[in-house]
Amino acid sequence: MFDVEKIRADFPILKREIYGKPLVYFDNGATSQRPARVIAKMDDYYLNWNANVHRGVHYLSNVCTDGNEEARRTVRDFIGAASEKEIIFTRGTTESINLVAYSFGERFIGKGDEILVTEMEHHADIVPWQMLCERKGAVLKVLPFTDEGVLNLEALDRLLTNRVKLVGVVHASNVLGTVNPVREIIEKAHAAGAKVLVDAAQSIAHTEIDVQALDCDFLAFSGHKIYGPTGVGVLYGKEALLEEIPPWQGGGEMIREVRFEKTTYNDLPFKFEAGTPDFIGIIGLGEALKYVGGIGLKAIGAYEGELLKYATGRLLEIPDFRIFGTAPEKSALISFQVGTIHPLDLGTLLDRMGIAIRTGQLCAEPIMQHYGVHGMARASFAMYNTREEIDIFCEAIRKTGALFEGGKA
Ligand code: PMP
Image (cartoon, rainbow, N blue to C red):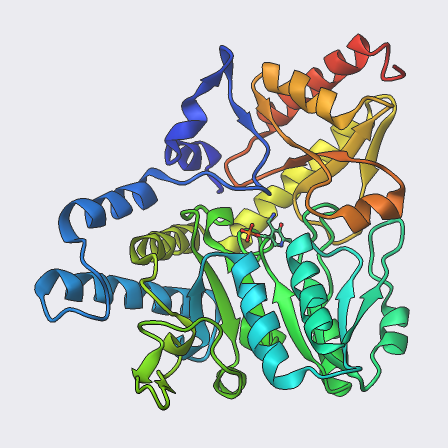
């Protein structure tokens, strides 16, 4: 049995009231909340153990180094990586993708080469590739999606020429919710000689990921979307590939020997971790993954799937309610418009009722262009959300619609 009340009790913020109303937090796609045990773990390290990692011979430094490296092994096991050398700590998904765009790009991308991304990528999986293309004279190609929000895999066969060196694909879209068939895409890309980076920012907290079963070359995610701290994320890369590509940032930690004539670099994963890492954040992320692992992503995914089904059914009863993204494989978020109500007005009115949703272009302007809209509203669910909250949300939307004369204002 999935005990949502027990889970809710782990998150102190969920007891808050906003404008005197119980908080309904439906902005988990932007960032999730953190359970008390993650905050307590970080507090403990700051209060009792703090010292810089990988440097000192002293007690505290060793404790933090051990904590940092234990978290790396936790990440390794969480995503099924073959080795902890394949786990690089970054600031988040965005930095992980930029690292690959720089390092892989430096080594493997030349004039006339192609990078293929999908039309439903977050800006973080578009702009770094555009910058790379500008630097190298390479070309960015785009795999389109249908109005339902499903990638056009026939176009993939056509687009995967032997000039494509890398495919960037989002596992679960932060706007459409679509869970993409990444295994199939990876197989096709590999057959065409391209490497694949999977943006797992929106899937990591909702579905089990096994990087070896997927056979992805790179995978990126952020700690703050899986109940961990902000400012910490992960880049997974296959060891052989990480060995081949150059470091990105230079500084302490990433070196073996520094001479003015020539510097040599450290082994994996440290070659990609210049400077003092956010080791207490990393330890917090390890704690968050242990917490999620204890509940189990299968159970979480099943529960959230039920929430999505319930919410979709109830919301579609509301007049003029339009959902963007109706793929059969969908993660627990709903992007929508109600009549002609501006999403910002909708978000502002819901906020007054204690409900937090996201509005605007959702860091995915090409998706807005696909549908010819300026913005959307989005409700994104987490394992601690409930049917009762969805009822409150539906009622609030009905009230807002009525304010705008049935959504036709
Ligand atoms: N990709 C996707 C699909 C996302 O949803 C997000 C965050 N909204 C990112 C990348 C970027 O993540 P971060 O801001 O944590 O680097």
